[in-house]
Length: 304
Image (cartoon, rainbow, N blue to C red; front, side, top):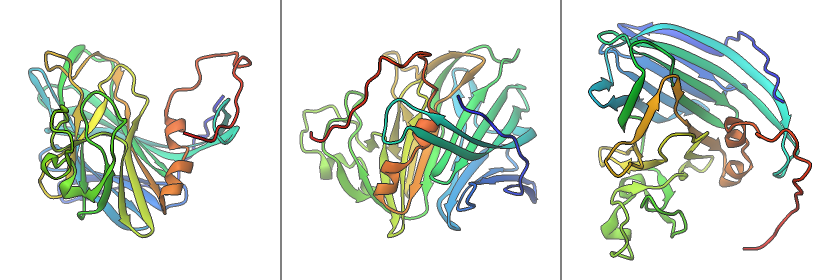
């Protein structure tokens, strides 16, 4: 079981930039940081840096629902900070004991004209950043349908990227290496035109080499009652946007409050090996549902 320690640390900062509200949270080792900014239009953006290098520039957050837009006109009601420091045991993987150490920031937002409540929870780990949306139980929103998730990943430069085409079907396909600007370019990279692969769109995980000492990977965790996330190359700078796998009628997610999205994860390491060794996805996924795991036998396998 995980035991959570609550602390208030100087790792959480808040300030006002003219009419904007800025809040941030850094990892325990102070290297990784996510910054949120609510601008004067009431739209929330985030940016991510590692070792003081901001590789993700201000990127939009929000949703479009059927008959409602949750894009802007928000105000911040309050925020909460805490530190989670625990260890837990797993029955599989390279390590029996997994350390879950992160600093967490929760933002409580309310849209002015609809009074709809939405929370953003962000966790800063030494090996990456994660955030998710939470819809509390509320009178102003009960059943709803998401028709677009507005989450962006707006990179500072045209970094080298490893990716494969998204087709809503499988992940067992060729990975390509290109600048961000060429991700999903079906004319340049598509080798099987008969395959219904989505142009300008990649599966997750997608891995980006920022420089010789910084590699990041975009993925998701705790994907429960939600559509899988693909990455749409917006062809606007070096920006990806979340593109959710739809139902046949075009609905993306059908939900009722209380409800939470999967975690949007950005693993961070000095090299690709650090991404492989990262425990961030294990820490963000739900705990084992089995009380008795004695029937599970683990072993090591080497091969294909």
